[in-house]
Image (tube, rainbow, N blue to C red; front, side, top):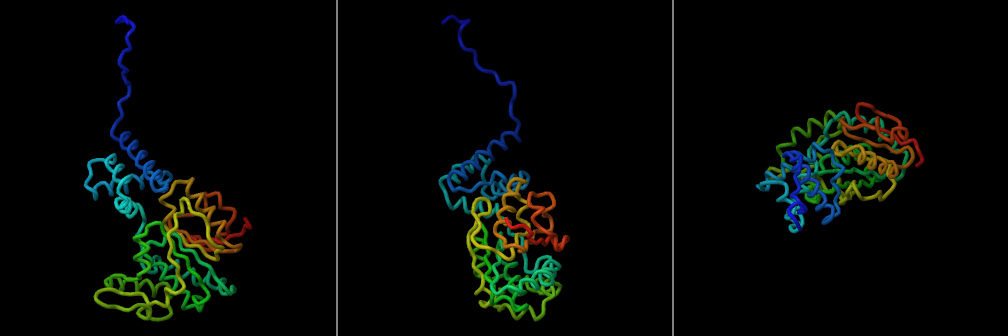
Length: 291
């Protein structure tokens, strides 16, 4: 081979910047997670996804996202830490009291017409809002005929929810929320305070089933009269939002109710025409389709 016919080294005209390198690292990390654990985070909202991955990176004291890939592949305990960072656990008892008040006034009155009531609280986090719901149902004389399915993909959060033990320092705030939500008794009737913690009474737990469920890939498991999923969809892109809302539509009985978070809406979703708006500000909808 003469010098003129020898292959020349390839020269790249584009040198990727740091953002492009990070985007590639995130893509490879998500592929590793999907391959190893069958969790697909590719349809999470990009800004939120990047922020949470970087938070995990800092807490793990790693140099770059690429270093997370072998740890995810070979250390299941590291993946659990990653899941904890990815899950949304911002919650409190009777969060947004007006929402609970509207549930009591506009939804529970209709649920009283059923002999058995199925409720799905998707993305229940550490359980504060699930117990808030149970308290209200009890006060309306409905809890004894309810089965509440409280689900999340974060097993650590589910363990906290099942225990129903919370820091007592939060109780004054929760009591105030309870009163604003139209509580009919004393909030102290529903927990036992001891050693700086408040333990939710067991009679509220009897009608709650806590279970692992991944909205990204798992299917419906019962026909529901009410589905609550607050401030979860905001972390998904439009494709995944529509998939999850379709799942909720399939899971609801005709005339069943759907409650979303204050920054979420059916307005621009494919499910818009399948629901009536019951309380616009509180994001309460009612299914009108038979699909």
